[in-house]
Length: 282
Image (cartoon, rainbow, N blue to C red; front, side, top):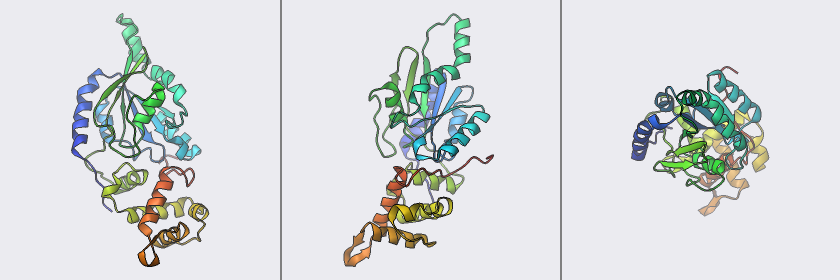
């Protein structure tokens, strides 16, 4: 499968981020804890040169806990501040304000020496589509400030949100990058729902997920769908269709519907905590 999705609004969003970067003290980058490396937009490092950086492993409740800790260690070794959070349920959110202040300690010290007191930290919240930026902002603010949705591409423009006298956030649209050098990255982003499902071949995508789960998490599919093991990934989709009574006319198995069920179950954590990639050094 070939993966690419870079609609026009992403070019505009990237330009907007470039224009606003000079106003920013800190970049808060959300990544998906199941694919922390693949869900990092390489353009962000270029945009955020010389800025304080904080990486949030969002949706940490959907990934294996020990893998989350390994990734935190990985990012800290690279010189980033890093925290695991679960924006939807509020896990880890309370510690964020302190982490923001800690990450901007040098900037605040410079301000103090220049006689600039009590200027709020300005942070830009960035990340790929569907990584949970707006949910994170609403959770941090304690109210609905940013539009949220279960599909990529909900936030289209920029939005300043004042959290309190100490912190202001700039919400930005989710952007991918124009070309995936490695199609394995595109595959993982398709798994987690950061590429529009409408442009994907659902059965093929789900069959690749079956392949990964069979290799890395044996027994999970058999237990979830009460099916027998098979090494044939398309046969597994048929078995899921049978188990979930997905039929089309003529009592044929509806493997496309079964594929959609499998992807939805994975994305919402109903298959258990699954991490799709681990740090190289580990």
